[in-house]
Structures are given as structure tokens and as C-alpha cells.
Amino acid sequence: MMGFKILRYDDDLEQLKDEEKKKAYIDDKTQYHTTNFKVFERPSSAWTTPYVVGHKYKIHWGKVGLDFEDMKLQISDQYKPEDKSIYLVHNFTDVRAKYDIKLDGGPLIEENSIAEKEAD
View 1 (tube, helix red, strand yellow):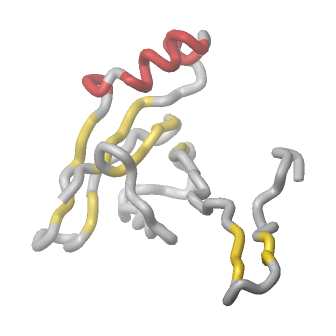
View 2: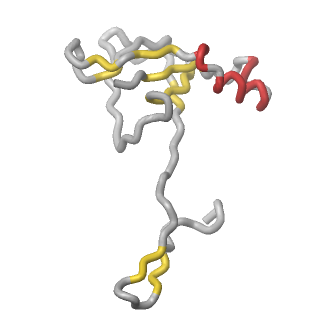
């Protein structure tokens, strides 16, 4: 099972202030912590890892990410309402492809659910 990758991603990190340094930092796999999937432990069927409150983390699953439709987070009983927040940042990639449909030699039915311009 693929690992869950975690990278410290606080706004005040020197590595994130310059786009070239930021790309190098994100691409450097030695900077990531990896948590393995727990099948039979408590909790089961989960990636479990502690976080330090008041920080931001970039997260993703495996080498190329994981295609998922929902994610559940469980907060420890140790977390108190007055504790600082934890921020999780992850990529969102809409993988739809533009396609057209033609049925039995009939007229072309254009697929139009993907905007032509980013602002659309």
C-alpha cells in the first residue's frame, strides 16, 4: 500500500519565499515524512500521524497521488478547542478530458462541460 507523504509547508519558510527554491523544496523527496497505511492496527485501514498545531503541511498519497472522492479526518482527544489550527494543503486535479460524441453516424454532440478559458 502506498505511503502518505507530509511536507512542512509553513508560509514563513525561507524555501517557500522564492518560486525556484519552492519548486526545489517540493521536489526534494528527502524533505517529506512518509506514514504507511495501517491495515490491522487501531485505527484500522488508515494513515495515522501526529501533527504539531499551528503549522501548515503539504500532503499527498504515494508517488503520484491517490484518486479519492472524500477524506475523513479524526481529531485526537488530546486536541483542545483553544489549540491553534492545523492547515493541510493538497493538490486538486480535475482529470476530466474534453471529448465529443457521435452516435451511429449522426450529428456531432460537442462536450461543453470544460471551460475554454480559465475564468469560465
